[in-house]
Length: 117
Length: 113
Image: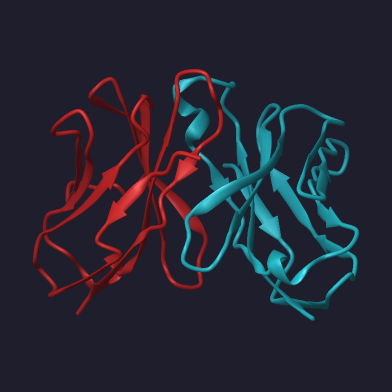
C-alpha cells in the first residue's frame, strides 16, 4: 500500500537558517503530493502541493519539487523565521483530482520544527 | 478563510461509554472526512462521506464507529463503546466539489480512561 516517510525530528534551527525536511513516498501510479503545517492549537493547513512529476509547489517561501525518479518531495525554505515553528506533515493522495477518494490522504509521521531567535 | 469547527476540543470518557465527536464543515463543501492521530503516530484516514453515505473507510473504522450528517451543517463521528486504544486526536476535514484543498478542523483530543 501507499506510504510516506519523513525525516526524523524534531528539527531545531536558528532564525534565517536554511531548512530541509526530507520526504519520500511509495505509491501506485502518479500520486498528488502535499505538505501540511500544523501550528500550535490549530488544525492542519495545506502549505503547498504538486500534482505531477517535476511540478514545484511553493507558498510562504517554502518550496518542494515532485521528484518521480527518487520518489521524493523534500520541503525547503531558504531563511526560516520564528513564526515557522510548527509541525510539518508530508502526505499523498493516489486518487484523481476532484474524485471522491482525493481527500483520502496518507500521511508521514510529522516533523516538529522549532526556530529560535 | 473559512474554517472547519470541531467540538469539544477535549473529551474524557470511561471505557465502554459512547462518545460523539462533532464537526461543522465549511458550508458549501460536499466531501467530509475523519482522521485520527494516536500520540506519537501518523495521522490516519478513518472514513470519507459523500452524498449522505460512506464512500470509503479504513480497516480502523469497524462496527464500533459510525458517521452521520444529521442536518445540513453538522457531521458527527460516534464511537459506540470506547476502548483505551481509541484515545487519540480526531480531525474532521471537508472539501468542495472540484477544489482539491482539504480543510481540517483543529481536532478533538479524546482520552479514554
